[in-house]
Image 1 (cartoon, rainbow, N blue to C red):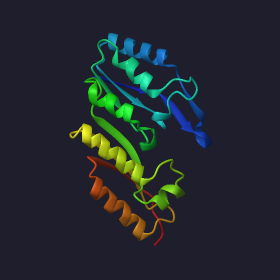
Image 2: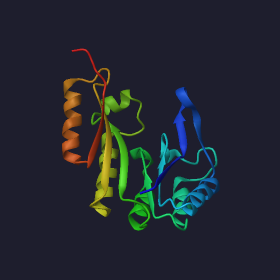
Image 3: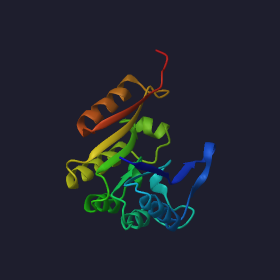
Length: 184
């Protein structure tokens, strides 16, 4: 299976500068060239992929719609969308368009709102849960991978337990766990 990964956006101001992306037309043309060479799948990835369009005034949904129209492209996978950036429109588009794989990679990082605040995340566990429930409602067999950080500086045993309990309740398909070691 041939897969090409297209990096869309970079957003981490301290290390990488301000958010930026290429125009939809440029990326769609890249996808057309890739498909013409026989590649059947692309993976859209980046840092804060859902923030796509900050520099061009376009939207992530317009990119998805443009890529959906590319002849020869059979599979589109989206990697790493923060829960606050996964709109109902994005979920419904993925559910309704056969080119999009029912695959979500969503950073949770912690099941504790206290830790999410300390991490300066733009979402809380309730928003994450609501997005997960909506995805599962309209795509019961969707694959949902979740990023989690354990041992975040200042994380208590109770906050770790909150994350564990939250993950048991939400039942993601896959966990990608990052372990930060803390002194006991």
